[in-house]
Length: 328
Image (cartoon, rainbow, N blue to C red; front, side):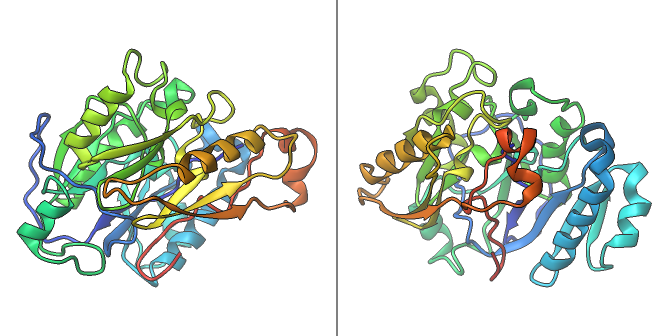
């Protein structure tokens, strides 16, 4: 069971008046994940998806929110029927947005925040050298990538509305892409380079008929991506179709950390080795050959996930972490 990503974040911004737009020119740029953040967005679980485990999951989410709010503001989307239960578990510092959701993976359902400049150099020319990897005075847009339940694998009627609501709530310009993609599908270095698996984007369950060039053109327009480093991934083995955020992440421009699975009975044994090989041969948008640091996947897993039916579908990695303000 590979899990999608819990969090979406807003890079540091000035307060804006919201515009709702559906078309745009090439004038957006996604920052690196280490950029100073105004807040983190989370979402809660629902019993429609989590069943008898819902209460336990909500408790874990409350613990995460209460921990993160010590470092930065936290906003959590909570379905109306769950507001009372969550409020009783959450710190008063955590802000609740009452909004019907389907599931808790905010990084995938939310829009992706981007600065209103077309690339890294344009941001520097407009706003000067970055401060804590970002530009505090830059205006923000938030791009909706049309969440469809990871290729219609799960109900998403409510989660499909989360992206626009987040943009409106945050006071960012709302933009709607023609690409179907989740936040966990793309990792960026903040200087124009992205990592993506083909399996999660060039996939008939998201983007039938799209080519790599089509995706690259759309990401240049929406996120200022000048170069995509592609790796195959694998279709149909987990709900995300192998999001890159399970396999490799930028730690800084030109530097990547990558997962390696050493159990040759697991499909990720080959997938992780292909990812590593592709990264080691790649150069980024600035022409730099990547430095790749390898983290072996955990060999010991809690008993409830390491035996029986659960073991067959559980995937463990140290790569799928969240970066906040001075905290990981």
